[in-house]
Length: 79
Image (tube, rainbow, N blue to C red):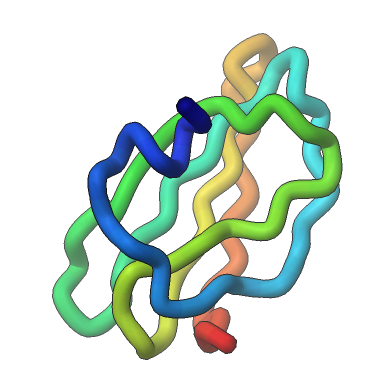
């Protein structure tokens, strides 16, 4: 069972792929309309295409757990 399947929802789309340093980074996918964190986890792959479960715009928050640095990509539209 994949990490996404463990969320128990069917994806309706996805966001643009992002490059990650998977040894030290985790992601949060935040629905901009509701402000709800859809999910958080550490992807296993370096090139991660975040799935989403509703149409709309999202913020992708990428946190480096080693340094504490955070990147935010705002206004990402689901495809």
